[in-house]
Length: 318
Image (tube, rainbow, N blue to C red):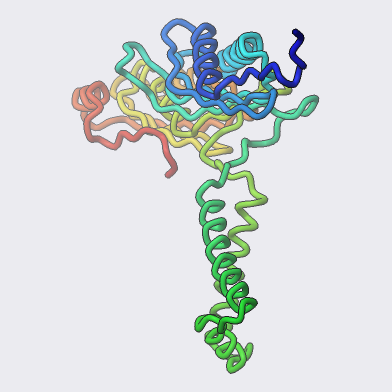
């Protein structure tokens, strides 16, 4: 007896299974010292979408490592599940420096771009909070209005809040202060929503050079500042370092405990220029280094090693 093709049943791969396969495949492509932190997957028809968050050892080229992880995860997931994987994301959430317990916060995101196109200036923010607030307010307003309209259609009386709003609007014109204030608030809210929709956001991230046309990557400015500060403290004579990284400029203020300040500054500029190139940024910020002789050399050196209070700060904006 032959069973028709429509009656033979179907094979469904659960999103949880896809997630486990993607996590395992990503772990196979990780460099020594890396680990998979979390993953997620969604299945729709014959296609799947996967996302994996990883921790990488430092130092490492995050863009190249993320590309290898993504290619491995896509290939293995498609081969083992039979699903197509048109979109896969790899997020580098942390860098492990030295021992696994020492973790440097990171925010590097790698996502595929359109075929044949170079990535945009920056990765666009998802705007989850504004979208959720707007959706909730719109749903509540539409729900109340729909419920009142349905009640009126079935012979009920209009809701008190709707008649009150109509009466108030009929008695107040554009010259009233309340109407002007309400209009100004609505205009500001509209401008804010338009900005959220049109502007990419994520200004605390620096665009990284993409290794391929389907990869976009960004590095958090705070993480970049920490790396530059670590390199600055490794320069002989530097006992203190304060680093601020912005989109166009990176400023370093170093305290010199011993040696000629001019020579220390020249060495710091050389080391930091090399560090900026190692970050793999598409447009490295301009470097500005200032050095200052510390009043107490021994105390300054001791503070620089221990990291105690003395003006040290990791990254951020001034």
